[in-house]
Length: 254
Image (tube, rainbow, N blue to C red; front, top):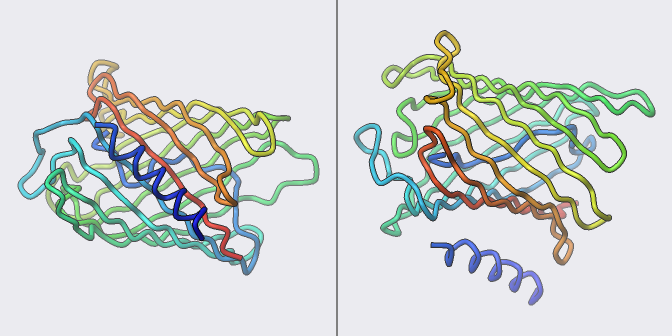
């Protein structure tokens, strides 16, 4: 128990001393799935040490010094389907805490043949978010999952389509592709690059100068039985935030 407490203290210190609006989930999906009947719990932690101090609509929280925590609960339905639920919370730069929505998801990964390295699937997400973090309160996300595991390398591409459903805001689907390339160093460590983009409305994709891009240097490692993904990202072009720190902590539930 003391070791687990130390892990959280260390993570909290890293996030708090490092003085996109970053989304509450910064992750490229791969073929990882819960086994049938298996439960999973992950905690997504994102902090913006240097971001925008302006807002895009009334009621939005500025992204500068914004901290987001999002528990994710998942369950393996069968070998190809996994259900999940996100419960996001945001802490403003003034220290106020807000619940910001509820988003269920359903993930499908095509079963691979023995020895096959290529994988593909689709994650569908639909849910509610408050105006403190978005200008569309109801949204749907379609996230195709394409990738390959080749020896120690994993390459995954998510050509994400984000679809605002509520009235107000842009009310148009946007194309937000994400790419990850990582190499397994040993059983407890993998290093990689993750890149997240927003290329604008599908009906009017933007040129390079008006696109949003954030690139992370990331590491996957184990600490006292916890699987942790930790990354530091830099935004450029039209990205709202200059620097973002993100972490995902996976708990050994079963």
